[in-house]
Length: 290
Ligand code: FES
Image (cartoon, rainbow, N blue to C red):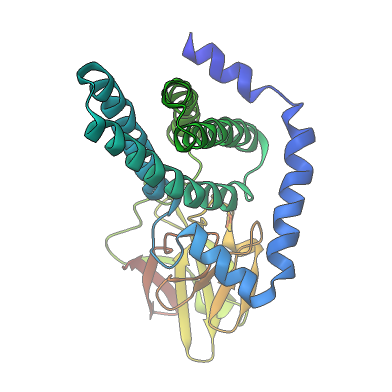
């Protein structure tokens, strides 16, 4: 049943009529911010952490609102005001963390496309609905309408559970947000990939190293090699742009340091695997590095 539901959602092309302008709006907003916009993007995506920030932040509202539901139930059963107050506090904590979850989620979603974008959009809209319902619950509680507040919170929890399912689908089935080099194992020993004489300087060259695509860059200070598959969403870095000692991905502009694969600018969060390079008998050889 869930499998056909997943396929059904992925095929809903009408979601693109919302996704297109929304995504354009987010990108324009970040671009308008210039360097600050880029820093905010890096912050929200988790580039600074080397790990996507969104899945970490979302644990807080999910955990807090689960506690709210339990404390509400215990408070009502025992007629215990302390439990009810604790439920209100956890709801408030979850609400504050949900604001951060929404911000990190939209930042991550702004680089999706195709079915990633459709499922991601539905996930975001479902979670936004849950947030609105919890806001109404908080308001009702503050006004003393406890019964309404509890009913709204329980409704919000069901909506949140549906949204969480879609979020899991986005990551575990579609693979958005995962490290796209996670299953690539470059050669453990040096393998020859091309003649040094044929390697053009100051250019991005893609070679095969034991079944893995590797990017070679020959500069004045040496030859550098990174995995060619962008960790963000799998594009080929060889189609990108060389910028000093870094390469910029052609798809969404992630920038990686050629020396060690570290992410300079997101949306990527995971560094590129780098390779050791040597020249033997006129041939460039690489082996998996860090
Ligand atoms: S695939 Fe998205 S930045 Fe490279």
